[in-house]
Length: 174
Ligand SMILES: Cc1cc2nc3c(=O)[nH]c(=O)nc-3n(C[C@H](O)[C@H](O)[C@H](O)COP(=O)(O)O)c2cc1C
Image 1 (tube, rainbow, N blue to C red):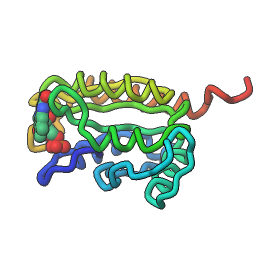
Image 2 (image 1 turned 120 degrees about the vertical axis):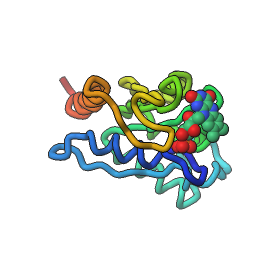
Image 3 (image 1 turned 90 degrees about the vertical axis):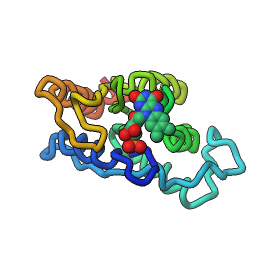
């Protein structure tokens, strides 16, 4: 989850996305990126020399996750600030991390997911793809998810692509 405003629908969308994961194979944790303080480390994240407990905790969470799904609204044609902060705080932990993106907004947040793909690719994450939930067909502005079977299938396929990455990581001996 990545939005912070009171009345945000992000948690409802993220909970719905998490509920589409294969529960027998996956153990999921919802993370609220808005709870991370703004980057306050003296050393460059690229050096991995994290001094603050919250940076260390976030680094461990990313490192220990097999895969990550970022659920982003579209704010002014891009993704909201807490996601940029969460990405910028770390560096090595993103390398080869399988990541999928789920956007929501009036155009399915396609600008937000495109911008986020560019940023995550820069930190060498393995972005497997993205999907977008559109107002008003896939969800209401109040956060009630009303997606079609086809859209749900698209998300399930995206999550399956993450599973493939976890089962056959790029750095595994072949
Ligand atoms: C600051 C701001 C900018 C927004 N800009 C866009 C936009 O560019 N495109 C869009 O489709 N929706 C835009 N919206 C609408 C949001 O996608 C919609 O309100 C969504 O519910 C926001 O997610 P949240 O409820 O989790 O905060 C914007 C909303 C806010 C608060």
